[in-house]
Image (tube, rainbow, N blue to C red; front, top):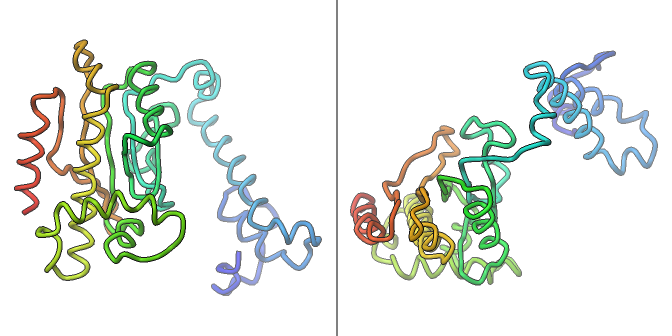
Length: 252
């Protein structure tokens, strides 16, 4: 809200059919809000956004929500970072219902995380997704904190998994300029998490029974909005090690 006032806007539209206009109106009309409205200023505009989005979707496809409410059949599971700048659907241009999503700090997959493992199991065994994409991103704050051994709080325990990746690949990371070292650890972290996904019982069992399923290592660039394939794409157990080694050699 404060941003729009700082940009110098002095007039509010009488009617705002778009989210941006709604934001402007709410920001500029702040003096007329009650104390309760001011306390909730970061929430009211979200309802405006929601109504505008729902109206737009209905205009594009009048039966969209009716169809969406009856069936969920995505082909893809996206395992990504919780970073607010990395929204799965928008990045790959898919609508609601087309990608199943799990996100956590630094896109980590570990055998003790029942949340992530449950998502993988539901995606593979129930939804029958055909692709699992582990998607990291350059500039990841979690990876940066792990690399710098920063003390943040409870999340430090979670980021130990990323620190383990750093220790494993110390020769490939240490000695690089700081930004490049950060980028390289972001990439290596994705590769290691793909290995972890591929080694889960759920994925191994799916391959054993012949279910079509591929696991992919991707990374997203905040500076250009593009997704990059890191070269580790696994469709059967015997391909994991050689393709992992090849992907590491490509990074080197």
